[in-house]
Image 1 (cartoon, one colour):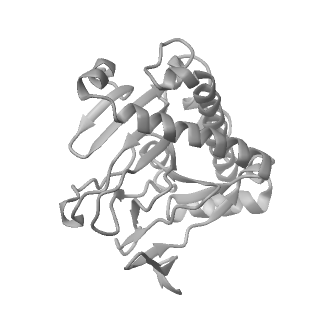
Image 2 (tube, rainbow, N blue to C red):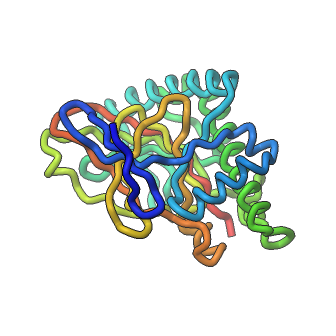
Length: 276
């Protein structure tokens, strides 16, 4: 393993299977310290938000264990849901909104909107674990709001400029918990281009397998993102970049696979989106 610098971002060379991967050395920031407004941790968060736009949150043992248990249920529900026949899943399709079931070649998703989490009937197998799913949505929302508050405080955005003002905790919301199935393909060369930035404010992502790449801000080099156990990967999105005059960075990223071969991959993500 070796480290080199690509612009302001360190990268590490790691051997995964029979592949040598260039991996982004992303900042790991403690959530509890951010929630407690620890100045050192807040400075780390601001630096990461301004440079790469990607970073990890780690958690204390109690919260980490709780989230790990919730995630295993989420992964099991996701696997059960996406193995159902397509015509059954299409009953959950909803036109012109992110929520509900979506399908495109190689990728399926199902999203539960935060403002509907207690008011709609979930499909099987999510319905059997509705309490766990709703608790997990609440934890995700707590995490992204702590991130917003920290960034607002670090940038001196008070009063009407505070970033949380566009994300009221009550009432209508486009935020939601999304489950994604994106199996690896037989040949890496067949992976469709998914290069994009996120349109919302803050994205949380859990995936136990190698699946994500970021493009560096200055050199445009593609680097892998290591799946870290007991952490959540976070990236900022377009709304925060626009609201801060490009001071905060919404990074370009994509789904990818490191090698040929067929394997199930399931993602659990939470999208914080502005309401105004």
